[in-house]
Length: 388
Image (cartoon, rainbow, N blue to C red; front, side):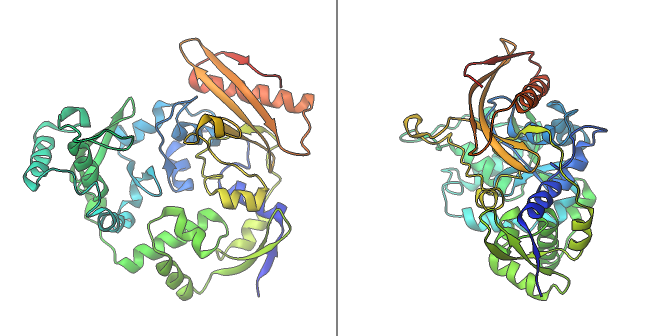
């Protein structure tokens, strides 16, 4: 019989599972943070700092921007591929990730990626150049876009490079100023990981079990969406044959209850839960704790949407707005912009959630977090362009 997890406990378990329940200080192990999260999403936008850096910094504020790239380019302890978006994953996950290459290939065969206007011989020439010259970025090639240029249209060589990257033939060697350099996978992935092979069932079992461990609790759909490396039918089959899953009922912020699954040690996890830190924290829009907007709203009653693709006149808040987490509640959102040349982090807008009061204590907490965020990006001046 399912046992019930009330809303406050569910919120605290979710934050603890995501590494946001404790004060983000102490000894730093970047690779361990990536392992515990499962993956870290990459994003190009450098509004203050790019999402991947912000996510890691939120778990330990001793983190600094070059550290992730050292794991990728020097240590080879992580690799880059596609979950629900481009992401960094621990290298030891690679053998369990291999099924994703043919899955994505099947999805994009016949799409604009596969139809890159480049022949098999041209693809082979790209591979030969990389083989002979070492890692290359898209700027090393000069094919041109044919026809009208649109937002997502790419030149044939870029589409070919990405196609081979999605299919696992190429792997990210390193990034320079966020520009991706491609190399042959067998030269980047350590041989023992590259050669290791597992059955579909073992990979599915690993993916589903590790998704649920990082969710703490979730539906079959939640488990499927975590990595986006399984189909819902595969998750259902896994859940049906997994004997140690615990049925639970989760209370929403609204008071409603829904059915979910939890790992076998859920009682231990709940017994070890402590009250989360009261620190006020500025989270990135792509943080794993808030990536699933529906789950965020169900648990916290926080209705959040990033509006970067919404026309300015139709935005409810702003272009790049950060959620504010305090304890186990989302208390507001803030619009920030950094200008590193001016040594400045500017606050453009601040919105509080209903029933949240702006107190001197809360203001002091936000000032401290803004100063810490400024130190991450190397700026000292915090400028308010609105009234707090």
